Image (tube, rainbow, N blue to C red; front, side):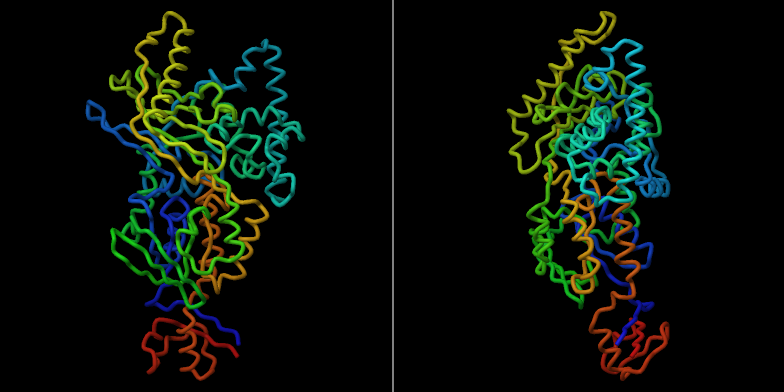
Length: 512
């Protein structure tokens, strides 16, 4: 018997989404655009996940911000969806602060060379970029190739891409994705694509903003809130999911909100959080592959802090040693979007601290904060002393104070390529019985553009295109009984059954 069915006019398929970060919101947008109903359950008290902006009013009443999560929009195809949603909501781009190359090894080594040597170095580098672009094409056509599972530093050495490897430290290690000897080539290829590096390079060399990287006026969290504005009444914040029971007949979710136990029924659900947290959801039928994912998922704890820096220009600054593994646990990068002129209360910035992968012990206690503040201040004072006498910077006035801290427990969450692909195939084959799909950085990359694009594609492929298969089994059975196994043309008007009045919510076709 072949059963075909589709939702009737009074019954939309209902999908539950676990997580209101970029992946969960992208899935919700795709579903709502295709006439689904959604409920988003979010553990925290805010929308946006790792799109988290810290806001503060200046002494003059001006609202200033700094990012504690996602900070930049790249000019890659993966950001086309983000750009479309941004434009729809009227959210405006702004140019990020310029980045100082003072302590970046790639530019430090170049600066030591003569003009002729620098020209030759850049020619070699451009040759490597051309080769890297070709390798990205290979990855996109054959992502399963074993060489892409190699650490990028090893891959770069084998393919003579050492200069590219050194350059990318700024955007891989510098942005918390791990040491180049650790992160896989597949992750780097997925992240950088082939259009971004040349544009970034031009911006770095000219020290002028380009469209290669842009920031969001109002902050990334504001952008996520605007995207969710149209369905904010379908988002349940501070919802701690305690059990999920899914089968061919649908999904039953139990969650706790402010001490009150609540229940939610759905036709399927989207897991938009890291496998690191799946066990806490109480999913009753995790498969062997899913259990393996919870045990083998790789991740970084990523400490970031909003801080006030007195006597600091509007610039982004990599700190000495921060791009190497030996510098982990110390400040690696300072960024700011606070463009006020000589703010007396200090410029609002973000301090990033890299850690090795796994459950590394780190906490922002009083002693650690004092150490980090001193390390940044010492670097800035040392740099000020080396500057020309004409500078207005007075080293003794430089001061750093941490005002807000955040540790991302599952940053750059990732799975082995083989396991990831196995999970993808399993969710296709077993969807009708498991009634769930997986989205998020573990299945793409910890980057807003990558995550939202991947979530949209998977949601479309496994939910939107299977919309007609989301009819609960009992409704199908009741229709079959009532029709007494007689074929009904697909699209025929709903038929009322004396046994089950809910039948008028579906249109069903039974082909013998």
